[in-house]
Image (cartoon, rainbow, N blue to C red; front, top):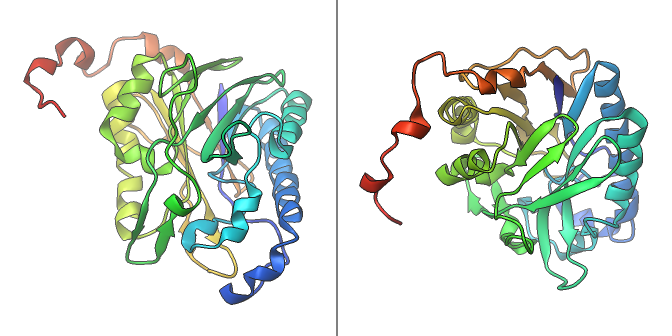
Length: 301
């Protein structure tokens, strides 16, 4: 099967040039969302026309990455994960192109009012298979800028009756999701693999020198260690008015720790061929890490 990742930036054109002027967007949040949904609809169409059967959009795809500072205006962008405008439109798009869509949105829980960074998994027939709420929420400063995600949303807890790291049965296989900062924590991919994941999507907004180096390493190691396919999606370019540079480099890795070729004709979409059949074959290295691990000797947390 072919799977796809987007690597793009905010598509809303009328952004202010200065951070202090962001307040003039207060009444235009729905315009921002609509512009990004329309933009991603075109990217999904491009992926589908090139044969992709599943696509993962970028983290918080329907907006600029607003967590570079603290601005309560952006709280108004949070939406219902099942009935909100992003999911409603993407359900139509999934059915039109018969493609599985992983859509990371800014969620507001209708029952509690709490906000989350959430990935909604929509099957090719338009059915919502479920959602995963980002578990690890960063707040800090690196060599290029700041990130204040804890100001906007909290860590996700398991939904009723589901594991903390759910795996979703779709038309193309069993899909797991970890979102950005989640990828740095060693137990996440292990939990998804144990739950049966064949393909793990990791949508992210990431920048900075160390993050750039680790982006080339973490997916390869996790894919090889746990024998899964992993696809990492990162923004590529700059977004006014912050003008932080996102390095992109979205890509897939296979269960042998190899980066897969990008077959896409569109620079904002990455497409690779994934042979899920190899997951049922022995590891060509001769390793059997699941059999030979020694949990009795590892330090308990």
